[in-house]
Image 1: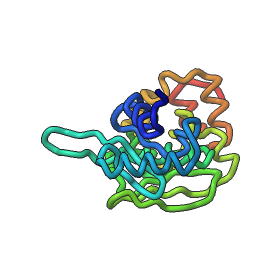
Image 2: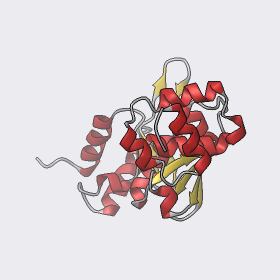
Image 3: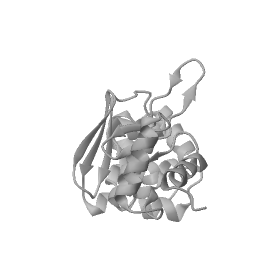
Length: 202
C-alpha cells in the first residue's frame, strides 16, 4: 500500500531529528505543493511540528524541565535561505558571538545575503537578512568569512591579546591557502592582524 504524503513527510522529519527547521520545499520530491502544505498543516494541528513563521516550521526539541525549547535561529535562517536558493553569512554581534569574540547574545540576529533584505519575526526574536554585495558574499559559509564579520563588529581597536588568542584558536583548522583566498576581500587592517596571528606572509 502506498504511504500517505503525511506519513512520508512525518518520516522525513523524524529522520532529520529534533531541532530540524524546514519549509515545504524540503519535501518537494514527495508530492505537489498543496498536498505538502496540507500534510504540514495537519502535523502542526497534532502539535507534532511547530510553525515558526509563514512557511517555516521546526521539529521542536523538548526538555523535561523547560518544556519546548525555542528554535536555533541559525537553523531557521538556514532553512529560509535554502528555500530561497540564496547564501547567507552571519554578521554583526551574532558573528562575534559565534566566533567567541563576544559574549553578547543579540536579541536580533543579522545575516548578510545576496537575496533581498527582509526581517522575519520568530517569537520575540528577529532574524534580519541584509542585502550585500557579491564581493562580500564570496567568503560566505567559510570560517574566514565568519571571522571577517566578527572582527568588523568588534572594531580594529578592540582586537586585544584575548581576541588574538581566540582568532588563532578559531582558525587552527584552516590552511594558508584557505585563509589567503577567503580573506582577499577583507579590509587591509584585518588581513594584517590575521596574517600576523597565523604567522603568514602578506
